Amino acid sequence: MTTQAALAIEDINAERVLDGDAARKPARSRFAMERVNWSGTIVLVLCAFTVLIPLYVTISMAFKTQGQAVDGNAFSLPAPWSIEGFVAAWELTDFPRAFTISLLVTAFTVAGTIILAALASFAISRNWDRKLFRYSFYYLLAAMFLPFPVVALPQIQLTGLAGLDNPVGVTILHIMFQLSFSILLFTAFLRSIPAELEESARIDGATTWQTFWRLVFPLLAPMSATVGIFAFLASWNDFMMPSLIISDPASQTLPVVQNIFQTQFSNNYNVSFASYLMAMAPAIVVYLFTQRWVMEGVTQGAVKG
Amino acid sequence: MATTTATLTVPKTGRRARAASMPRTRRRVDGVYYLFLLPTLILFTLAITIPAVIGIFFSFTDSIGFGDWEFVGLINYVAVFTDPAILQSYLFTFGFAAVTVVVVNAAAFLLAVGLVSRVRWKTGLRAIFVIPMVISGIIIAYVFNFLFSNSVPALGQAWGIPWLSESILANPDLAWVAIVIVTAWQAIPGTLLIYIAGLLSIPGDVYEAADIDGAGKMQQLLRITLPLVAGYVVINVILGFKNFLNAYDIIVGLTNGGPGTATRSIAMTIFTGFSGGDYAYQMANATIFFVIALILSLLQLRLTRGRNVF
Image 1 (cartoon, rainbow over the protein chains, first blue to last red):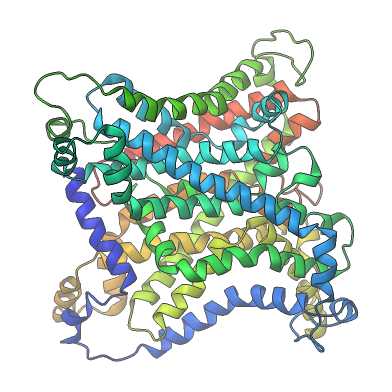
Image 2 (image 1 turned 90 degrees about the vertical axis):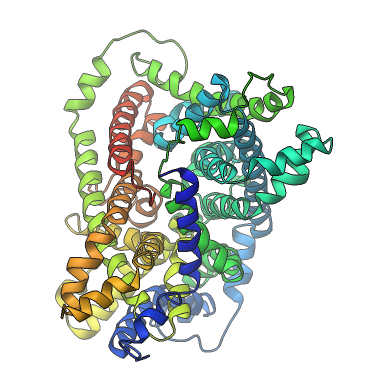
């Protein structure tokens, strides 16, 4: 089966994921009328509590006073609701600073990954007959087989020597580790764009540069969204790389600064949980607004890649 | 990390792909294409290839990360293979990865079967199940750390259950269970979404035919559903296993390798190389780990090749 045909099938799958089993209902409903599976629903709702309880504890602990947080039961609601934890966490972790650093690292990782991977994928897929481009593809893909721990030590050493033991160095490494997967997604998608489209642009006198930015890049938008979501999650939530690469504790990212609650202030649970909540909330909010894309992206990422 | 949920489809080099991209006469490559590709190639080489080569090179020396060094041949490798601390970290990491893969796939598959059946609040439930995927591993590990060391023992004492009354994280024999639970909590969503895609790709008339032939629900699950999503199981198992071998964030947040060194993962031992002056030695360890990862990746390519669903 050719790549194009496989992609077509997968497109349908991705849509079906979003619509639930809508596509299957008409065929089956002739047999079993729309009867709701209540026992299944109850089991799933109970399972959902295993997801919600840690989140509930985080929120309720964050809004407690210090006295309540130390003495009380973790599962009880705050009484009264208090924001003293947030005030203290804001200052202890220097939240505005850590948040800004995380935001910049993540934003540049997302933008850098999309642009570099899209440009490279376009060059590769349109010059597949040339050895340089074909081998570059396999070369860039090889990093998928390379776990970060394997190259971590020399990278710590070299970023230190190059003066990149800071958020800039982490951004570059985040982009580089996203490249393989992103190029894989982009090249698969580029193969499905009919050559006639680009030929007609060229006949109208567009250069390769113009063809890419005016025609191909906009066409890549759905795949760019998928690539961007993966880059966002990997970069925003990463702990391993910044904790090892960034040498100055004052320029650490949001997940890494949370470790002060393990060493100091370890009994101020309301403060630490307020801090955790502030660190995880942005990703959850982004997720709630982009749910469809996130789910579609994961499915495509796994199925298409 | 989500990155590695990709599987590799090598582009078809057959006639069709060539015909699409290659004009009849050999053309000149527009110079701008080099401009598109070269920055990425150069950055990638500087950031990944050169460190990898340097690291492997130093694994044959006695370097401590800076200063003078000498070639020592394979001494580091011999030492790695006989180092009980490193062997223990491999044993722990592989055992942990194997158990977690089974737990994650079993749970994700059953949840996926539930979510594509005729249940209520399907969209809302799915949205909730996916949340753990978007939360940072270290932070969720800190939250669970509190639950395991404070809340659960408190409940155990209140209910008078002795084995619940002590923190599981302080028990060298059971701390790994906590790590499996939290890792599974975070890894289930991605696996679940892939299984949902797999289940929805099964045409409904297969089940109709089974209904007519009088197959029960359990029989349908085992004889129809499971074989038809076998490819998705393979991919989820291999990708999950590879991911779990890199375990770091969640362990740091829960036990930091303890109690003692009971839950120290391979990644954690490698990283001790920088602070502990064992640079060359741990690079030998990292190189061995790389070879293992490479073998698993080749296995993945072999098992998934030719399946059009991937």
